[in-house]
Length: 111
Image (cartoon, rainbow, N blue to C red; front, side):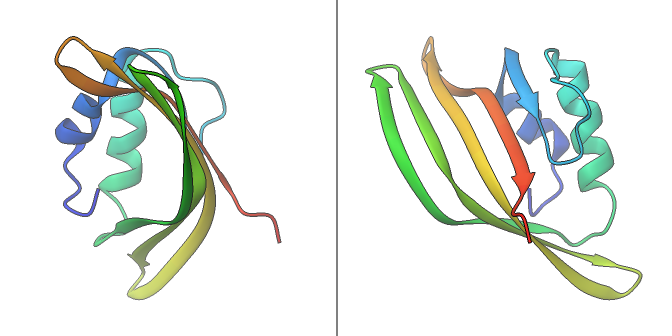
């Protein structure tokens, strides 16, 4: 995320992942949609960073884990630094030899 490496972030997601980013208006269900989201999100307002500030894990099975927590996104827009606190939930599942994100949702923390 910090390196704005869209290809690397897309590879973290399973091809059939359910994805709903902060600015998503629909549930994205295809890799092309995940790519388009991150191309828009990461290639603007750079440099950017994201950090989980608090989270809890829940083991669903030996091959699936749910993560829920809070994060902080930062970036630079028009020469000024901004930050956005968010709520994030994702499920990571073992697919073959790899662990991949199979479900992701992020929304802003309400005021």
